[in-house]
Image (cartoon, rainbow, N blue to C red; front, top):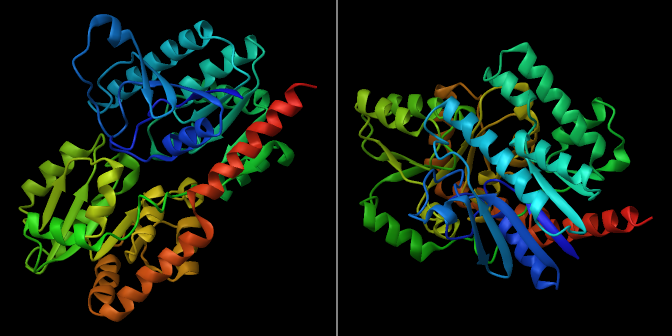
Length: 412
């Protein structure tokens, strides 16, 4: 198969961010498929690029493992401001569409959304060039943006809903990573036969409990005598880091506990400033790390936190960090309703707290930290649950079946 994948924030395992697409592309290529990725030079968790020539800044072809990667230009200020983010999205949507017009016609295209803009422009090119495309929906745009209050203009909302509907109508298949997204599609009358629900997966050969590395990390940062409460992921508006900061503020005089936030995003600098203003010596904000380093730091944690804002749309979200925590046998504090809450309760791998209730977060935190035997049991439960339900192999096999089904159906 000759497959092109459009994913703006594609990264290798040596770069910060999740590696779902990287693992998928490598697996497809190793099975003899020709795989090309069209992406930005800017990763979501890393808003800068290396010094390149002018030509390379416009378009740079590289090899990542067995996959050809075409990195194309987009505006650099992804995390500078909301307008910087909009310019980044729009510039990539234009350059990715041009790239899709120029490359040799593939047999099938997999387009990942969000961002919705580049999904729409590349989907439009696929439609015009008669290339069957699969739409992977990781988050619902524009619905989630509207609930977050990021979009208020009625004209912009209408245009984005039209873009969304075009993609749903023209895609041969739609892959959803959560049941909530699938239910949304069914509610807006997308045929169920068009939808493939595939859980995200974790590579257990690379994300696993690494106790010796955890000890080294604790020694490096002077955490040997501390209880480490860790958040590992994006620091954006949706991630509700404020509840963690408030909990840390309530515990600021407790010298035994340290909160470690690892990641990048539009709110990172504001979070650092807030920690400084509140004089929270028990909060440490570290830069985003490559996924390959993730298990080492997660293994240094006593408990890990996953949070999202208390919005209806996020009840259908499964943050990949939650699965990573569980893969590293960490007990979890979950401030997310819906599917994420159900996973934690089903797996018996931690406690759930109300999204904006820092008092409940602190209460649940002490329940875990005060019982080492229970904490270990929760970590083991989470790991076993991931092995059973969330392996990368299950995800990759399901994606391959969908791609093959589209190739077969589009040839008739």
